[in-house]
Length: 413
Image (tube, rainbow, N blue to C red):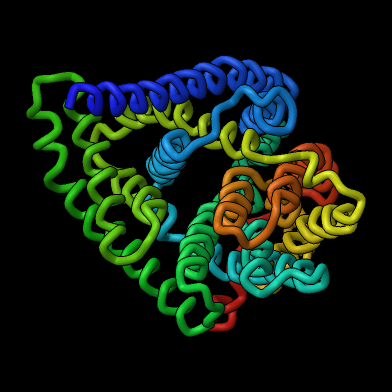
């Protein structure tokens, strides 16, 4: 018995040592690279990816890669999505749902279709093509928001539209990824099954948002602020997040569905700003692990082959074309002037978190090799580098855009 106990303890200690090393490398090296890229005016997530590439299988091979570290990495994404939900204003989100939703459908469909088309032309099977579409669909607007603030254009119809569409885009990307995980488990590509999973995810998401928002604005503040321990409110909110994320197990969904929904539902609760500030620190620290781990797992030697160059060029080109055609054209059709529609499309160019997550889910499910992970990293780098100068150019001519009213409202008058 004592021998078995020692053996089990030894295995546990090995995992603990791996976890400590992974955290040390991600927190120190990842954060140093984050600081470097922030100073260059780029998203910190690029620093995490670069750190993972250097420390992982491709170069130094010192970043441990195992199931324990992967579990912590995914927990980081759950926290990051929860924080993103907390930072989204519930009422503003719901008020402009129609206008921004129409643009989201157009640009999301165009981006996803181009990704799927690229995969088909490159000879990938349907399930893999599905994830190539998911890689191109999502938007990450941290660079766009920073640029709009710098040039004084955030509080414009285009700025508000970029923000609103990006929020909805994240929800669509989340549902696509969750439905894709079901694809991997089922082993078959079924449109009907995809529709069922997507409907289930949307229904669960709406139920969490609507019910929890009602509870959080009426009853939760009394419970949270009756507690005398200063950490109690943060602990209860994080416990609620974990509980709702756990419940997704019983409806066959990903915990990512509950994470963003929980944050959005709590976003208008009295005193949530104080809790959000604390959650932000935890989320940003843990999420470093996911991006560093994802890049560390990537084998550049296998991905950097001449036969993959057409794939990389096509995916990067499609990343821009999907948002330009879908986002720009749909914005024009719903009522924005041509120059404003172009500005919105450019603001939707950047990719980051969901792009990497979609690629990693497909890669870990065995649908394709590391070349798609590398393509996602390249797309993240190129779109984030190109967006700031392009945004400044499109806002430099054409004048200010007046208040935009959707075309369907104009016709009623």
